[in-house]
Length: 237
Image 1 (cartoon, rainbow, N blue to C red):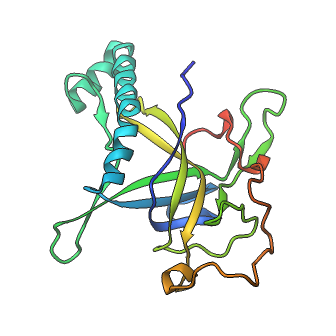
Image 2: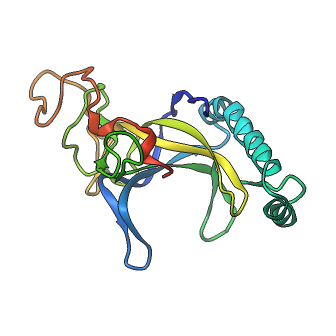
């Protein structure tokens, strides 16, 4: 059995194409029947925060690639030779931890990178007493004070926050692709962009005595619900 890797919280970054409020079921041409939640987290590549985050990921990433190389060696000679021909002597196609962002006009790197983070929204239990039954799951969403939002406002691109991720290695036998999967557990919204508007903090509004929005929020420190728990039956995102 694979060793369970620790959950990691990302540094504060900008959300890109977040699909956090409702599952994304894909398109007509590219359907995603089980649905998924996802976000791309954008960081400045040379920032101390990004460097520290990458340093924390590095040992798990290297271990995932080492595991993939071992799995290639254990393949029957035919599939192994094919992967070695396609991907080089160790047969592994290395997928990077992050993706560079390029300027559309100059086509030069902007200095920003993004990490793909996601999770399946539903699926079927494969083993155990619930085998064959369907499960559903969604990420936990918290505000800047650490209070869980049961019915959060729409979260748009440009929102700023942190992401709790669960790491796991992956290896695709057919292509030899290997890397480290970042599974979405939850997010903390520090600066909301919703419907074209920004959060109070970005407009210079700090915390004051008075009205406090309580609708659909749990008390600070509320325990995660079962709907957001992780389980081994969810499979790869």
